[in-house]
Amino acid sequence: MRNAMHTDRARCVRAVQSKDARFDGWFFTAVVTTRIYCRPSCPAVPPKPENMVFHPSAAACQQAGFRACKRCRPDTSPGSPAWNRRADLVARAMRLIADGVVDRHGVPGLAARLGYSTRQVERQLLAELGAGPLALARAQRAQTARLLIETTALPMAEIAFAAGFSSIRAFNDTVRAVFALAPGELRARVRGRAGTEQPGTPGVLALRLPFRAPLTPDNLFGHLAATAVPGVEEWREGAYRRTLRLPYGHGIAALTPRPDHIACRLTLSDLRDLPVAIARCRRLLDLDADPAAVDDQLRTDPVLAPLVAKAPGRRVPRTVDEAEFAVRAVLGQQVSTAAARTHAARLVTAHGEPVDDPEGGLTHLFPAPESLAALDPESLAMPRTRRTTFTTLVSHLADGTLRLGVDSDWPQTRARLLALPGFGPWTADVIAMRALGDPDAFLATDLGIRRAARELGLPSTPAALTARTAPWRPWRAYAVQYLWATDDHPINFLPV
Image 1 (tube, rainbow, N blue to C red):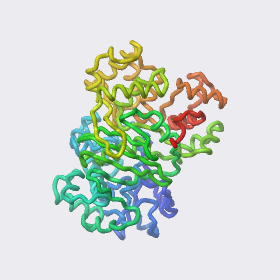
Image 2 (image 1 turned 135 degrees about the horizontal axis):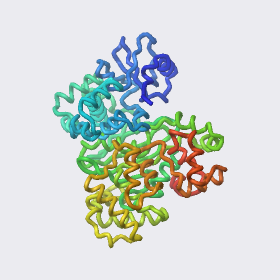
Image 3 (image 1 turned 90 degrees about the horizontal axis):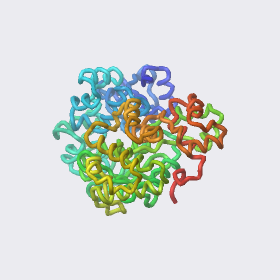
Image 4 (image 1 turned 30 degrees about the vertical axis):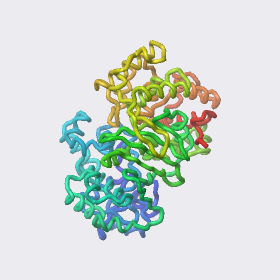
């Protein structure tokens, strides 16, 4: 389904007039009299309908000569949920742009990752989003620049470099064009603002990650904490913390659930990784989801309705590293959560890259596939058949014959996983759900799902249960979270 809400003028006008935050990120309102663009929930008095025009992206607004509203800060909206529920060219391109591919490899690099020509990619993005990949990447650089200006005391020259600008002049011109303020003026506006935190430690940034309400954090953070690999992840003082392998260096993210945002503290070895780190944290916590659309559909089933009413807004706990998750999924085959953590911790200690963590107990990056491909299979404390599964997977990941990423084609990648030795439906489906981001992935063979199904009066055999879940599509990955939450497993509870 195409994200065409900006073309439904009557619906957009209603959303703006009611200041409906559910539609933030779905479309942007440009006001022709003031030349300002806003999010739908802007607190200012709504403009007259005849003065509104609607765009599908902030980049399209900027392309049309509009500047960002200083009150509602539209560039801080949650991302459009369309990019994470679709697997077509435009959605895959948007995920790659958010992951910094255009800034690192240019539009040709983006097209190569997608398997299309540069012209095809540009044409499709322009048709749907009103802006091409360069304009979309520029909008992202502007947002990164504003974050660094407002949340650090870095010199402007360093910010320009970290945000991905090729020159100070391009940085200054873009900030002025997008925010109608010079960089120094933008910083002056936030000095002394209540709640603005500027960490004194170099390379440390504190920011808020917005989301569409409601959000139930219990299973989201509970799952990440209960399955945390020692050295790579931990729960400390109310925050989920983990190390990040990033394009220019490494980082540590600390994520704390708050009623109206996720508090995010990032420690980065190279500030050029800021936009990628933010994108991966948002993806990990599924913050661009549209809970209203998900829950409205799931609650039409009388079995799921009470579960949704009890704790609406459940998210799918995902990953910051698709290859890492696939390795961990294999380690978790047919063993307990504790045993899977033990296997992973041994790999981390033996093959992970050490990192310093002055604020906690993290010690390593999770091993890269290249490191794992070089290990001695006999050193793995697991049955021989699972060793074969493990070594085959890491070999394919290391040599590039299997690539897992935000640009993965979901059905095609799932089929390739099932072709590997030792990969059954559960392993392929959990990777599709949590690593690839398929919102309709369903774990029909999962023991916890089958147990929940029996208790709720649903069919418990995989084939019958899969048939029964057809009305839940395309949100069956979210139904998995509601079904899992019927159990008293630690994954369903925030740690104390």
